[in-house]
Image 1 (tube, helix red, strand yellow):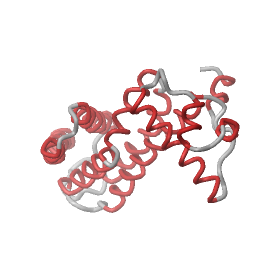
Image 2 (image 1 turned 90 degrees about the horizontal axis):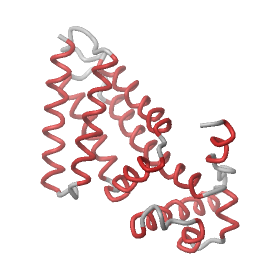
Image 3 (image 1 turned 180 degrees about the horizontal axis):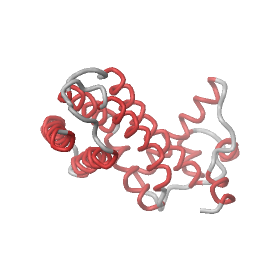
Length: 209
């Protein structure tokens, strides 16, 4: 993507006051609601502004176009997930491998399931709008945190390599998406937590000893 095109996707300004933050929050939530109820093709800045209770001019103060708005919504969701994983990794330092894996998996699944409908919708439009750079950039935060915490596991004889960590991250993303697309029934989410932790633990043990 050209530099000029990238600039067209960036927010025009960042809210610094509580009232402005509330406005941006309402715009983001309205975009999510319309995305869920009408789909990507029928989501327009006019519809979003009406749902948020603001003027189109107010929306344009923050987002120059529909793509910029959606990118901001996606970035916020990915940031929440990465932050949850980073916090879990920090708290699990020095614990056993099994405890670390369980903490990371639960943090990731919790972050995705907090708004399962939103996560599913974002999976769909992120693929349609082809924004792999953002997904990759934020995903690197989780992988970096995971790499750091695994190096502190007392029951590992050697640290995992970068590819093993990428494969574990891919397993978390892929299996969680599968459950989301299946409707995320509670029983399946419970099984996801335990079986994904078992899968990741066995894989890391096999690739570090």
